[in-house]
Amino acid sequence: KPHLEKLTLGITRILESSPGVTEVTIIEKPPAERHMISSWEQKNNCVMPEDVKNFYLMTNGFHMTWSVKLDEHIIPLGSMAINSISKLTQLTQSSMYSLPNAPTLADLEDDTHEASDDQPEKPHFDSRSVIFELDSCNGSGKVCLVYKSGKPALAEDTEIWFLDRALYWHFLTDTFTAYYRLLITHLGLPQWQYAFTSYGISPQAKV
Image 1 (cartoon, rainbow, N blue to C red):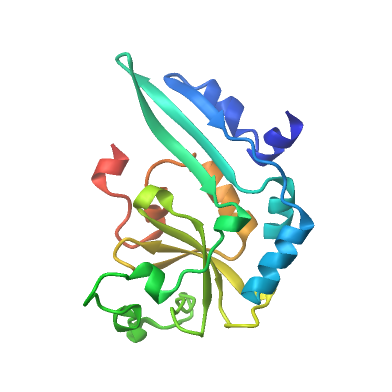
Image 2: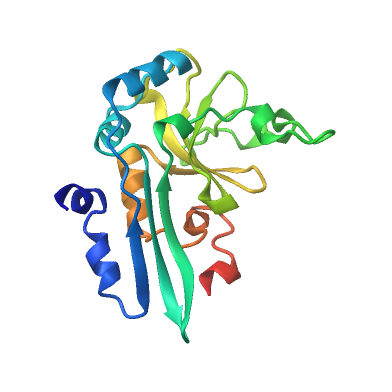
């Protein structure tokens, strides 16, 4: 289907022709309607970036998976996902830390690592930033659409960041389009986002 081909940047054919790869699956989702986007913007007091809008007008979320066959066993391996609009929800301190006596995210913020020439300023869990979850990465972290200037939030103030399981931030890309290309290029391999952290991908994930 042409629109699916466009969405997956042709990766489906590459995967399907790779030895050992099986069960390449795309869960088709209908396009979002414009009113869903405008109601999201009103509810969150944020202007959605144009490339994110265009993505949702093509498909309301994205999920593609593939497996490998090893000695008659089929093992799920790749998973590429972008939340639907209804799941593009704001990450707040309370949603991240509901445990009693847990340190607050404000406690964890390390202000000594603020913006420098080669490092953009990290997102904040207070009113300085507005953060939305694009992908929960099967529990290995969260990919987030971050508005860097608080509300009312402007589309041009967005970046894509990765929040690891230790709740440290890692910059990924300036735009959603650039992130989406990265996601497809890395084939949704487990923990691929950790390649953009100082500690890299875990040995288990590399195997």
